Length: 343
Image (cartoon, rainbow, N blue to C red; front, top):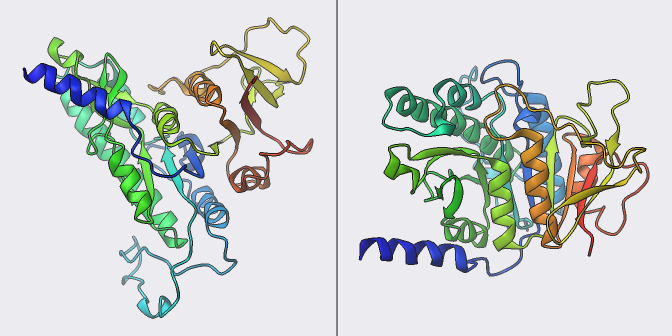
């Protein structure tokens, strides 16, 4: 009886969308872009601040910067910065309906890989300890991202998948309480989710019971139910290349087309050897699939008829993508990768 009840709850949670209106845009802040990937738990403050500024410009139509909302004490400061008088009698600034999801970068991946949290087996003390350590790390980054957005006047709210009732079944999302995300947006907030360590309902029976839920997978799931106008992946490189971009003669793939069966092919530029395997190399510490997962999830989104823009964070090219300037046409001088349906 209890098992049937749980199955019905899972089917209900995945079968109906709680979003009353379409989302304007879902943005993925790549962990490698907003953190210093070779320094454990080090935020790239300059990039995060610039990304937050560009998000404000894209989300809030007014040229006037709204009052900051981070009233907490920052490290090194002697007091809390808070000036309620800035709010005065100003009318509430309209903020476009965005969802932000960020990766972990130099947060979480180290803890997860050292303890093999992504492989499960919670019955092992090391895995259980790593699960806790991973969540401490990724939620601490989430707080800093929320604070950076709040300082720009974006009413951001941190939402952890584990705490919001997201579960997997054999590492595929089986249940996700999207109502909390939808209610936050309807209330005028900008939800900020992140890659997280979560429980797996099927693997739990086998004494495993946990996995790592990638931010890229979270985005494709959110896009399926919220139907955004477009999706933007902000990364530490200009887009998708035919090989690691550090290699000589690496080619930026400007447009990738996705067929109805989910397969994808490069449209621009025309590669000399179209059958050549694209080299999607992963970082050694990355437990979430790296660029390969990013392309796979982008293809799922594109199949829905939603354009995906993969672009370098904190550049003029990323601002154009965030603003929605690319939806009508892709300028020749724009550097990035667009993933779209063949339809």
